[in-house]
Length: 181
Length: 140
Image 1 (cartoon, rainbow over the protein chains, first blue to last red):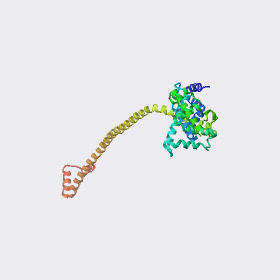
Image 2: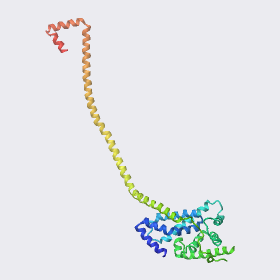
Image 3: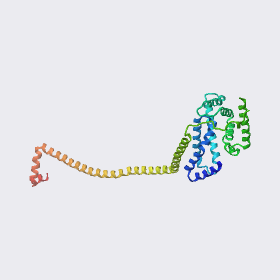
Image 4: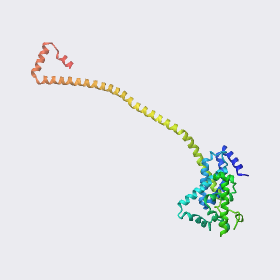
């Protein structure tokens, strides 16, 4: 079942029963959106806040949403913006310097209760954190969410060609980092 | 150099137990409450300007009516008081007349009392004019 077909069924329900339709939206997409946010912000509590803000913002505009765009990409757009907003706010408020902020979160994964990965996965997450923010988003959406470039183009308002190039470079950087240890 | 596809495809992140059930419930309850409030406020917001206008007009009418009522009863009372004043003044005037008469009478009595000769003259007058003293007493 493609995400777009599901979106059409829910969009029909949103026309007739807004509350029930939105309930289905939350139940269907909360997990997926949470993990997307979590991979960007790393910390569970931050991801929790961003996820709730995502759906609250979605709810405010849900009445306007009908057939204008796929619900799936629209929610990812909101979630991505919430995550990036939180990251930027974190940078402003951080006690450590901006350059060391990624190192801070890299080391926070180690021994964290909420990180259950092996050594290889820890190295991968460390390498991803070293990417620029936008490139990190592109990589995560493609590698973990398996989003198509067409869908990603709608989420990030960027051309498919630029996204392909960005992902290609991201993979090269990560593999170089992984191979450098 | 290690390739990405060599890394196990496993989500390394964890969440608290039953997290998604709770967060879904939290999101739905917060947005559901917001929906009811939005609908109420939406209707209220639409009608509020009209309510304010109606309240202003009603308030103005009430104030005007109250002001008129305060002024117009005063005129009626004034008429009544004028009537009362007239009545009381008539009484007062009557009393003045009476007091004046009494004073005059008093003066006259005093003048009579002070003059024994005056009394004798009166009696002589009465006898000459054939006026019965009893008639005079009756008049008094």
